[in-house]
Amino acid sequence: MGLFAKFKAGLAKTQSKLVHEIKRIVTRSPKLTAESLEEIEQALIAADLGMAMTTQIVAAVKLAYETQGTAGLDYLAIARAEIEKSLATNKPGLLQAPSGPTVVSIVGVNGTGKTTTSAKLAHYLQSQKKTVLLAACDTFRAAAIEQLKLWGTRLKVEVIAGAYGADAASVAHDAVTAAQARHADYLFIDTAGRLHTKHNLMQELHKLHRVIGKQLPGAPHEVLLVLDGSTGMNALNQAREFNKAVPLTGLIVTKLDGTSKGGMVVAIQKELGLPIKFIGLGEQPDDLQPFDAKQFAQALFEE
Image (cartoon, rainbow, N blue to C red; front, top):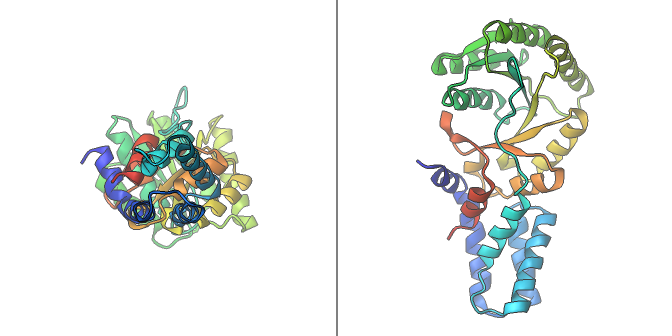
């Protein structure tokens, strides 16, 4: 399945609801009234595109209607173009350290899919002929270490792990040592799920980052927040708060295939200006894909 087909399949629920609503509003009356504009606005907000993006699309629709009337007016194409324009500055993909291993810290609240995402990122880089290591630094959750080791076996990726309840920072330290010794291209650190409001857990994350930074200057080179797409605008609050607590370099949005709130990707990128690096569109290892603004906008508004 090609990348666009994946985007289209993954965003099917959001797309179907959004396109259906806009077409229903537009076909009811060729005239663009205050009432139909308000309904278009509601449909965009319901897809969790956020207030700023919704306002931008509605303004563009209004302008197009005022300048050209209804003749050949394509509301979906206008919305698609505005989203594409808004996401044009997005830089997907991962940074690479100038020398030595690139260390990527995977952070987020519980249940967003951090462990699975770490493994899928390893799989993605393997397909690009990169050597990868995984570090099981979630030493709290009962099955986290086993889960990562299982993925490691499945993907043939070495997993550096400690015992349950071990100090996460010391596991991360050992993982950086191993990545340097094995000349790995990338090291993914799967951290424990934590709420941004839990001060002690945030302090622990700071400590982990401090320890690896001492050992490998510049590390972690990426701090990626994993968000669950099905939580809609709640994910925006998480991203906002996490970004205050730990400087983030990008976002990964998972579980977009099961939600009609796919527009939240646009809302978050627009408000926080943080690049969306990857999006998760299914269960399989290759269902995590680098974010492509053009194909995302197209899949969202494709008839």
